[in-house]
Image (cartoon, rainbow, N blue to C red; front, side, top):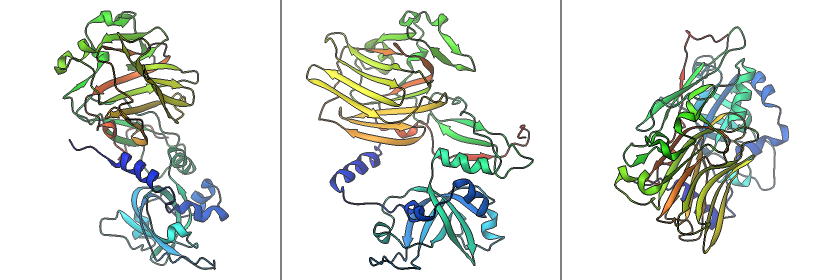
Length: 402
């Protein structure tokens, strides 16, 4: 399978071209920014879209009034009725109704004068200007800003994503929200694909039948109170198994040099500890581990020739479920995906992450939190297949949405 090289290429380009700046449309509105809540109330057109191009961006270094250019967006979601683009305001759109041009009534910065160099997702707040859309404000999209917009329109927060319907070979999961007003625009259910990687050459240590690898015995492991598909781990609840036995079903005798690990966890405010560790039986203090701390995720490696640490700056201790995938390529490249989004790629010294052949796998030692899934694939290119960034909106009138 061909590897998705975008994260690595993007990182290398950033290193080799540090002076190149991308066009950030949000910066154009910093001088007259109003709150997201006010923008939702004041603007009849509100949508989320991926910036894909700009045109007519003639930059005037001497400054001036009235400069403008057009940004082109691929629609990801509409917060207010998408039909209004065509019907109420006669907005001109492409035939597939998935792209829209927006006039930016600001003088473009030098970066934007050269067009879009790195597509970003934005929320656009606009109004109709003849057959065109003119932006009143633009902000970068995030889960938080997305939620703020929906709350103004009457929706409560999204619940957690349900467990994935399968452990591999593409399942589905859903989340729901409730309307807090008499009527809310939009949908009350979202659905996405999950665990899209093949079952071939993938193992799930938590399904091992030999119970003596579990401490305490597997019968004494506790389920999460509100999620029977998950385990509630405590500091001395762990799984310890030799790699040779774990991988026997895949016809390999040692832990692969390249792999992807997928796990679904729920962390609490005081969560810390090691969720995953490979430790050498021969060389003391030689290991590879994935550790949680309150405000970040850490991949640590120690060997006789030194140690390395990769800090992944994501705050996960919010009592919500998170899907995390970490891939190791060529013994020195680390990719990380969190909740379907690529977070970072770290390139270490060559062969930094060489693993001992006689390693034992330990899951959950000195860890407190909930663990639903932990799968290991011998293919290091699958990090982006834990869950899909595309979501299918569903209106389910049978559910209590009031």
